[in-house]
Image (cartoon, rainbow, N blue to C red):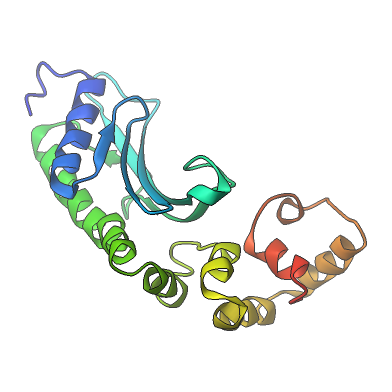
Length: 206
């Protein structure tokens, strides 16, 4: 990387290109994303840049979004069934402003993506149902996995223990909201958007 002649966009593009080469995911330049597809599952790593980039500053972060084609176009609120964000321990943005920082962050991202996106891609490629079971058992909270998707693949009996965990952890306020929702209330975010609590209530689990 020659930071003396590269623009912010060129630096970010080179960073994503390097990751594409190391992960096998396709670089979608129009969306500033890496993508791979296995059956009905689409995995995308979406890259974001700081509005303060420029004048020697190049900062980025990224999100992994796992989408289910049956639910619509990839990486939308409706189609995303799991995901995880990549943020540094000491802040919100990764700094790739110079060669040393660029290489250090690239190395970190390569490891993180191999542990997440590449790993789950291989799991889905190897055994679709087993990959869903892995998301349920090992990554449910970390990846914010949607129960409606897991129920469709695994069935209601297999997801019930996670449902019970969520129900048992409900606060008195949330229980009151559920009673209000059953009477027609729509004044909380969870009542309006697809989420696990709404799924649990509408399925009659709470």
